[in-house]
Length: 291
Image 1: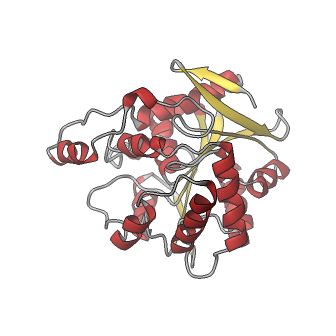
Image 2: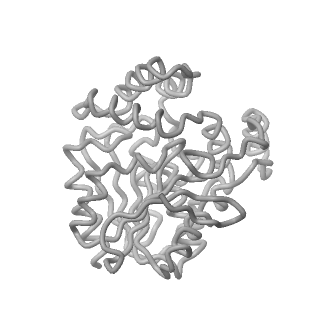
């Protein structure tokens, strides 16, 4: 696959569909490779007239790793954030937003529809106010503003999902399949699909260290709620009613803050892309892009 050379690093990306179609940039979440955007999602978007671009965020997949930066001290980062200070981190979400714009530059694309999930949804929001001239429409899925007034993630899920994972291949896959069952909501867990995804993920690039640095990046710029009021492109916010990471209030917070944003709440959906509701997600992204 090709690489974009941007911000003195390499970003691995992939395209699907006709390059003459309307471009859509898909931004993955914390620790997720471009694999998070399944063939089903990408092909459905391409069939609906999009030129699909997905990529590995920095520090994950086949993009540049920041090994020399070490593992951030999250306690100190949180303490600085609580004090109202800007913590020192290896890189920020703003840097990651600029990486995404660099991918568009590498493809000579001036404007694109932007879609992000979870942390990728935060990056998508940042792109939309940091680089507004590059954005045609915005789709934010299972994400947040980082607003400290929002209810926190469910602690029992956080403890289980972010506990250390085995490094051995089969043990890692089994553990992640088990964890996936915790976040998929009431109706939508597909164990076989989860196992296939986690196997591909491990075999393509097993690199858990990057997750800690990406997590640290989420501390800067922190609460983006005041900044997203400037977003004026058509915006759809998609959120699961049973998301244990970014609770439903997080989706509502985005939708009520971005002017004229629409909100789609999907009953029973957790923090995942169940195949049963992908058609519904695709439909609203298409509709939003045509406004």
